[in-house]
Image (cartoon, rainbow, N blue to C red; front, side, top):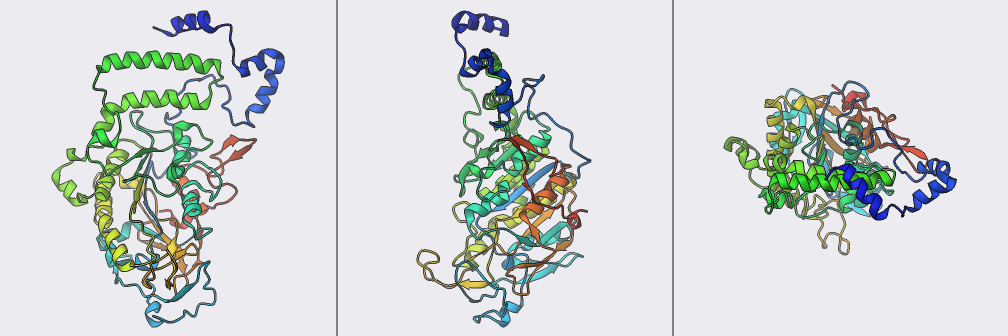
Length: 484
């Protein structure tokens, strides 16, 4: 059955009926509807009505990076226990800090020295905590931003700010913006993949939403707690009919969908559904290969490790190797980095799950000559206070051995993809409470990430509700010192 036959059937069956929109157009209000289209965020007519929205698109200028792997340390890791040592905390241990600017939305106690030791690594002499010691061999590849700051000390808005550029309003995620701007190199895999074990994080799928962008650009969620491909991706194989029969069924469905879309002025939601059907069919072979880490040599698997957190970093490498544009790897699900108490045990355990695999990822990318074109980013939504958190009901179980949220200063590091290796950018104050030198807001980080991908954050816009939106809204500056 082809498109001509479908049109004939449609004309015979329901040709006398029309949609509300068609009625308005036929009633002489078509020009008015065209004028209102942008206000309602509806797709405008195009000669290429069914062009694949994920087809590769030219960047604004030559890019340093082609892919991004964003390792998201969920819950807010402590910068003063990982990549920003503050030896003065030893001097004031158990005493109030002298910092006059020390302020927080919740009452905190005395100085809390890090229970971990720091060591300088590489020719650059970057300080790294012993819980992340495996990364020391890559110190000269790391671009450590010690002067990050966000807006508020709460998880939900800070997650939204880091992932979507706005703490409160529904906005497209970073991965959605990048795939909207560049498309993907592999039409047989999603352009934007989210690896997150054991369910959704706080704010659920909003972290990788496409919001008002077409649905084709939202992240594809994969629960990496499973090892078998059939469980990683539901319905990846059709066990009832052959591939040829399935192709015929899909062609019929797609033809009907195209006819449906033509009659409804190519609604973006319907176009996204059309693309998802096609992608799901093509993924059956490609995804089976990409997500099966057992196909890797044993020495590669051993280098990463065999836990869930290690396995998903290996999957991330396999995905970017196959042209996936943006991979977000979540770490801290179930046991987040939100160490209000027992910080020594929790941070050591969490870092132990991932530090070896992070080092293996950088080694692996470098050996495959992928690090130069893959930007690796690692960090959370904010940092933690240099002071101990006082006991609060339900907050830290009455213990005095953890830290509170801190958005005034924290650390994010990058590697590869055109970032400057062996470089420390900015600084927090002597106690580690707030960024004071070369401050970098989340909007600045996003602008820099887009720049490395060849995108001008001021030109990457989408018209919705009568205005042009962008990831950085009306903010953000490229931090050129972070560029190689």
